[in-house]
Length: 153
Image: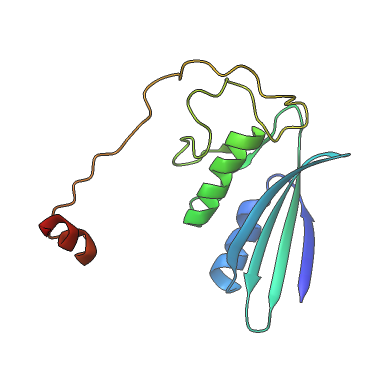
């Protein structure tokens, strides 16, 4: 069974919460599209049995491509949203981790490779700052057995 819903810009949180919390669905994909009518974001939720697919289609203002975040409902959603920001310039409003996901620090600001007006890649320059890295606090006792066995050799 497949259902499609054209919803307004303010409705994704309520629809997604209903599908995730009470409908037994999981988020499978979020895709952004530039088509003849502007920017469209499609959320795909699936559940089984029986095989069920629910799509939420949201049109964005091309001059202000933004939509409310759903990251508080699902961790994968936050990743999809960060990727849309990096590649399309679509801003997930009030995202709890608004850091880059796929966009490197040497990419020019305001250049989004999946935007139809992106054109050829511009000249990449020095990176904007140090790449944020996280120090591991893991100890030998918390690492996987395979990591311990290679360290002992």
